[in-house]
Amino acid sequence: KSQLAQELGLPPRQVAIWYQNKRARWKSQSLEVDYKALQQRLDNAMSDNERLKLEVERLKEELNKAQEMLLAFNTTTNNYSSISSSCDEVGSSCLQLHTQSKHHLDKELYACLIGDEGHFGHNFFASSMS
Image: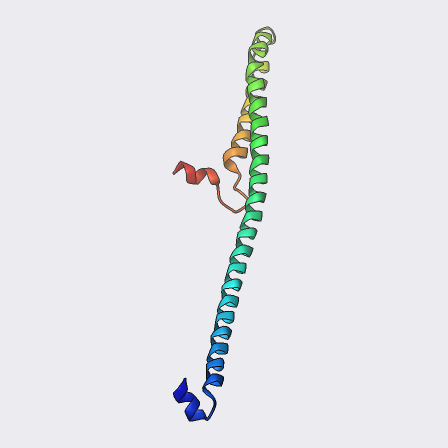
């Protein structure tokens, strides 16, 4: 610092202040860069959080639908014995109608759980089964 002060013809105190200001500017710029990086990470985390909240809501809706279908399936299965006894009197067409109805419920439940791809273009169950 003193050599530079002599070469420039400035008082050493002025050169020391110049270096001090330069360090302060560098530190301020460094903090600003760090702040921008942290702000970007926060924005990304908040965006991911919002996306995940929407995904949770969608999955809850799918779960509720699957539970309702399962309940309907179980109710239909429990009613099978009463339908079966009345089918003995009416004939095989009643049993065929019941079988078609049960098959339709099976297909709907399967489509709900496996057949539909998720919001983001992949089947969540496929990755867990591999």
